[in-house]
Length: 195
Image (cartoon, rainbow, N blue to C red):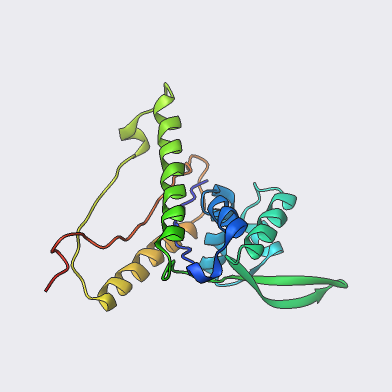
């Protein structure tokens, strides 16, 4: 199954404290949570039943636990509740699409560090394998320094998300492989951004 993980949850530092930060880091570095987040983001809102329908390989109890953890951490929120056979069925939406750590660089740095540690771990495990083949597995890293207005940059990111969504909606062939795709935007240093 091809799953493209995009770390696009950016949360204001005003919403983060103590144990919530630890939970947030666990969520951002957990592939199952990220699959659920991406499905909800792609569909704008989903019930647990709808999530289970598109992620049949994830056990029901695991989905419920992840949903509870993500709701507590403020990553997703309940946007609707309906009665289904006498039970409350919640509909969830991703609370924030972009990360902003306005008041404290420390929280943002913790999130980024956790993400880098997870990437390092995945790379380390990959290269330890006797079966590692960078060309076959299409392992690569790209760095583009691109100069755009805020509007054009936002439009470009929307297009990137649309491409990922288009491929996530494809029928998954038997030979498909899971791959992690990380997207990060970081201002250039030095005098590059000066007029």
